[in-house]
Image 1: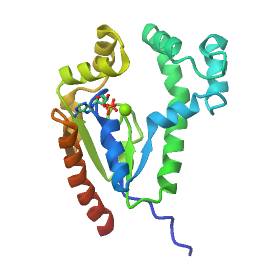
Image 2 (image 1 turned 30 degrees about the vertical axis):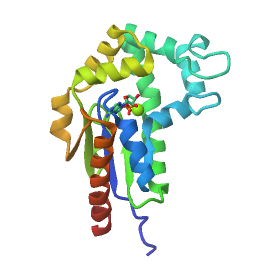
Image 3 (image 1 turned 90 degrees about the vertical axis):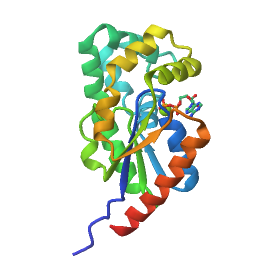
Length: 207
Ligand SMILES: Nc1ncnc2c1ncn2[C@@H]1O[C@H](COP(=O)(O)OP(=O)(O)O)[C@@H](O)[C@H]1O
Ligand SMILES: [Mg+2]
């Protein structure tokens, strides 16, 4: 019998908006890990010509598709906040596509292990069971708020609404095997990533 394709060692990386997931995963990449990022996959699916565009056009009409053919994320976000049913239909289209594409990318990854970066890893089904380990980037909500506001220029109330719609810190921490404390400097975040990288290399070798 041909050998079964060997699934890589997968570390699920999550955290609330603005917690520092991207900063952490950028450093894991620098150290040589493969990163599969469901945010990037979602962006690609909803870019001009992306795999989800025609399904979204059919579901929500031309008003949600910008002139250049991408999903109008601002309009879609407003609709999804206004109408919970629209949010559910949006997720029913996107989530299966994101799950399938991320699974494909994990199998194709060539690094010693895979960081599977999923903002809603705790909230969405279908990810935790794929992960050998779960790593949570954590910081106080006030810092999340400040960092998101500085990064995006979103209004306070919008940032608040996004944070409130996500899992709580307590829920995330309860699911964590490893925690990156990102209440400090970027240098401190990176030192913690380096330490975890060594342990993930060892765990991936050991299995
Ligand atoms: N420890 C830190 N110190 C200062 N700024 C940080 C730190 N961690 C992240 N940031 C900044 O905060 C913002 C949010 O971080 P990011 O990694 O994009 O969060 P996420 O991907 O979880 O939404 C970014 O602009 C990032 O550069
Ligand atoms: Mg990010």
